[in-house]
Length: 124
Image (cartoon, rainbow, N blue to C red; front, top):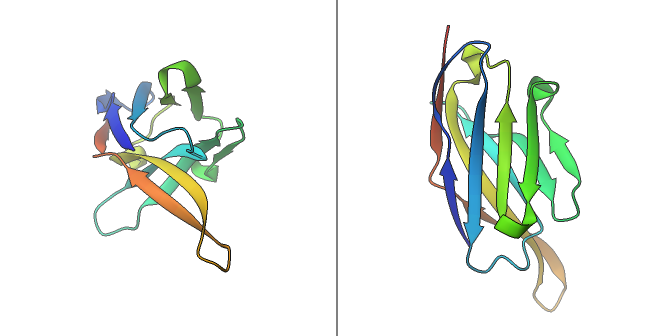
């Protein structure tokens, strides 16, 4: 699975920005996609995700401001970010994952795929 992100950049606080992530390759068995973000010296954290069935999940710090959506025909996931704050400044990574069963024991595991990341800078 290959993921190509676009839409990052510099925006003033309070402004909007939309990120896009286009998936290609072996995408038929993707369980879900989402967005994570990371700042230096901190762990990558989930921003929002959406499953192949349309179930959404988002972090508390973005609820009411960010919305995740998808266009299945284009194999693309979007993150609409509104009312951006300086603390939203980070590298945003697109994630796709597959939940698969491996081994004779039937262990369930998650395979993750990542985009290259796109920088979002929110100026105050």
